[in-house]
Length: 547
Image 1 (cartoon, rainbow, N blue to C red):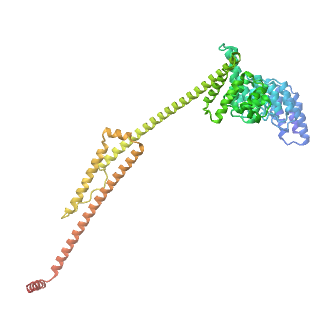
Image 2 (spheres, one colour):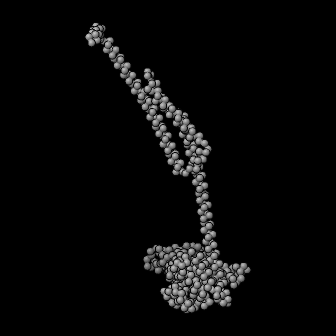
Image 3 (cartoon, rainbow, N blue to C red):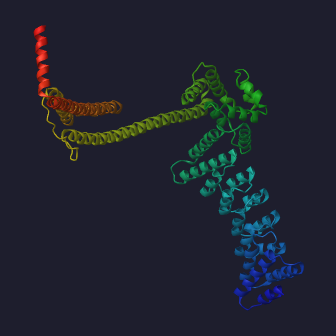
């Protein structure tokens, strides 16, 4: 009954109402858990809605079933062949479409359709290959930027070959984490060609000079890339260079002069057809290399240069000539130039010119390295100077705070603070000779300590300058020692004052006891009768006379 109501709703005159009905009917079929009969009726109704003249209805159907795996395949295939804005919805996400459907859509559709397909997740090799062959720059940029797209090395090279002059495409390719080494070299070579064409069009260089600079730039780029490559990647690069006609004698000679012997051995092995181990043995043998040179098809005029460069390399390997980075390359070039001096001019001219360019390039590389080192040292010194200035400024601020603290401490010692406990009430002491001396000692110590505080607070400028020049550790130790001495003086003063007060209290207590004893004796005497006292005195007088 509900399906029939949806069907009645789809017959509305308004295209917007029909689109709402189509969307509701499609969602009910996909997610409504309908029974078999209701599901069949809904599917039939959805397929019938494909004949609706309004694109709003078909777009509503595409939006509803684009990401669903339960959508009817006839519906999805029909929508994939609809208008680009409708077809793009299902081509971008639908799991119903297989590789054949996508390749057909890419071939039959326009650039907008291919651009949408290039952004699909987990794009297979077949679909990516089709896009690489027929896609435009925008499609290829999106395909290269799709990290889940599976693209073979051959198709990547094809993309560079078709639209390698597009800077955005080159950037997208170089940003791929799985980009093969030979594709990186192809991108660098295409960039060199683009720059060469630009300078030639501007009239800055002749076409011949521009082409030579482009070739030497490509050779240097491939050596830089292969310096960090593994054995398998190196073999693939060498094969790519040979098939593309870029593996020549100049590149092999540059590899030897640059010390890239792994690449040189791989190139000689590919050119000669011998295995790597045998080529390595022949390269290390002075008598075995000429045969390898001829078998590899290298020009005979370059044999002296190759032999001299390999001889310098062997000496460096045995320690006869200590290698020194860029200096090793220059020594090898000089050795090769010396070996070519005895050649006829017709053969020597081209080789000497090539070696001279290599020597100039090595000298420039060495100069760049030295200039870079000097600049880094200058930057380091400037950074150290700024850091020293910052530390000195912080030190001066700390000194100012320390001086302010010392002034406050000196005034606190020199002037008694308000609120100190009042002095004890004076006690009458008949004999204060024993007390006067300690009091005088305490007063003298207090006066001396106050004088030292004033002297410390008013240091001469020369002394302050000396203190400013002292290291932080010495000054910290000096401050700690001064604080410890000040605390010791305070403790001595307090201990002396306490002893004086205790002495005063003991003297007063002894005098009080003596007074009490005297008064007690007088009281006892007053209670003795006068007759007894007279008798006691008479007895004492008699005893004295008897004695």
